[in-house]
Amino acid sequence: MRKIGLPISKEKVSSLSRGDKVLLTGFLYTARDEAHKRMVATLRKGEKLPISISKETIYYMGPSPTPPGKIIGACGPTTSKRMDPYMGQLLEMGLLATIGKGERSEDVVRLIAKYGAIYFVTFGGAGAYLSQRVKSKELVAYEDLGPEAIYRLYVEDFPAIVAIDSYGRTIFR
Image (cartoon, rainbow, N blue to C red; front, side, top):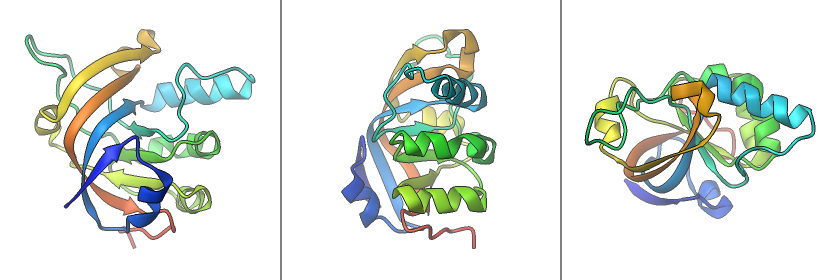
């Protein structure tokens, strides 16, 4: 198990291989379908995104309601393939890593290799466990989207597996 600091560097990304197990510590952003749709629409209008995604990590997740006394509710990954139509433009803007669950399209595998990015998977069905790895949560954009808003999380020892490395090698084939 390799410990990886966030934001992740290009050098660290290129040192990881498909199947590597990692523990991520640092800041990342959350975003799901509607936030991705809005970010890409913003870019197409020539406007600036509400967050800088250059060299950042986006976790495909929308938390359940936060119980009293907790930082976040259950926060398991959502299906990554739904974000595939938006990946090209976001990788072009410098997005370096994504976290979710499940396979990605062949186009996304090629884009990840083209931009030297990385795709991690984490454990579906383990949202309560993963919430224990979240040490802070801050709403940063698209508040009207509720749980699909963009949050900035600080995570410690967040478990993940390299599903697609920066060379386009994937655990799914």
